[in-house]
Length: 370
Image (cartoon, rainbow, N blue to C red; front, side):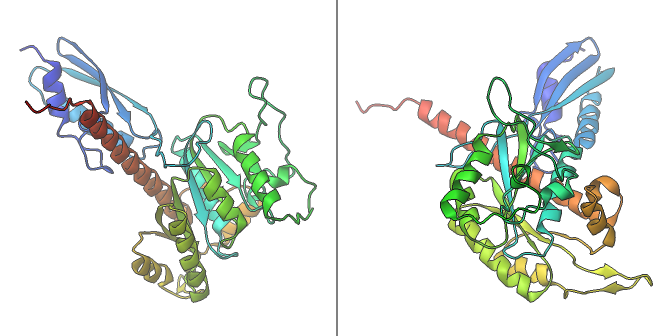
C-alpha cells in the first residue's frame, strides 16, 4: 500500500507538544515530508530552539508514523524557531525576540544570582541569550558571569554597534564595562534614561531568543525607563520567604501591572538551608513565596534552597547551573528557565493563532444586500 502525505499528517495529529498541549499539526510544526517507498522523513519545527522536551517529541512523532501500515523506517529532523511575542506600542530591539525583566522590589534577595543562572540555563538548553545589567548604581552581573574588568570589544564595521563581552554562551552589557572599577555613578533620571536607551540601541546584541534584564531594587526611574524603552515580554519576581521581602514584591507586582507587563511568576530564593546533620532550617521564614503567589494569583516557579556554593561560585564567575548542574539549586533554576520558555511559547502560539484568525476574517468578502 502506498503511504500518502495525508496519512502521515493524520498520524501526527495524535502527537502533542507536551508543554503547549496541542498537536504538532495544529501548531504547524510539521514540514518537509518526504516519502520514498516505505521510508518516511519529515521535519519537526519546534516553537523554541531551547525546547527541553525535544527528544520526547521526536520519539513520539517517530512512533506515531512508524505505526502506519507499510512504513519501514522513519527519519525525524528537529529544528526550532523561537516565537517572538509582540507587545503593542513598544519599539522592538533589533534582533531580540523576547525580553524578560527580573525584579525583586528589594535588594539582597539574590535577584542577580537568579538572573545569571536563568540566562545560563537557557543558553545550555540551546537558546541565544543576553543579559542587560540595568542596575546602574550597583552592577554585579559582570562579576557573576566571570567578566569583571572587561570592556566593550570595539564596534561592528557594518552596524557601528558596540561588541559585547560574552561568557557561558551569554552576551552581557553592564555600565561597569564603561567606567573605572569602584567608580560611583551619581546620575539623575534623564541621564539614567538616556544611558539605558543606548544599552538597547547601540549594542550589538545580534540575534537573541531571550534578553534578560536584571532590574535594580525598587520601583523607580530605571524600571519606568525600561518599560517605556523596550517591549518586555514578561516579568519574574524574586523574593525570600520573609515578610519584609514579600511586602516589597507586592510593589514590584503592582509596578508590572501599571506598566502592562505580564508576570510569569515568583521565584522564592533562599527558601531553606540543609545543615550538616541533614536537617532543614528555615532561616528566612517558611512558606512566604507560596502565600504571596496565592495572594497575587501567580505561579510559584521554584523554591531555591540556600546553598553556600551558589554564593561562592557566583563570586567566582561560575553560576551554579554551569558549575554543578546536578545540584538542587541548579535543578530548581533550570526548571524555572524551562517554565519561562514554555510560557513564552504559549503566548507566541496564541498570538500567532489570533493573527491568523484576524487575517482570515479580514480577507472574507462582505456580502452586499440585494
